[in-house]
Length: 128
Image (cartoon, rainbow, N blue to C red):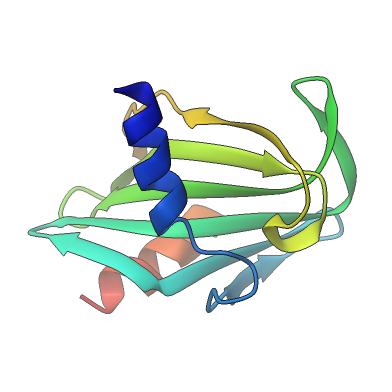
């Protein structure tokens, strides 16, 4: 069952070459993107792939990681989100060796006003 679930996630995970990454925010440490083409709407819930691209490698789970993709789910009626799946990559923009991948702890997190996640929320929930 785990293999089937992983195969499905990998099949729908956008590759860096074909994804429509839209820049949401940039700091001296990271650039944050969303791919609005991956949006899946189910009532007030919207799933979308995001990408965090790091300016310099960060040690994540003991491996130097340049970028991370995450499948997020936003509850557009309750101003909250949760991370369903996350993967870390050795290179920029989700390229290179996959350092880690797996299901995340899907606890709902409130959207903090004027945060990066608030900007993502506006893009994802504002265009329903």
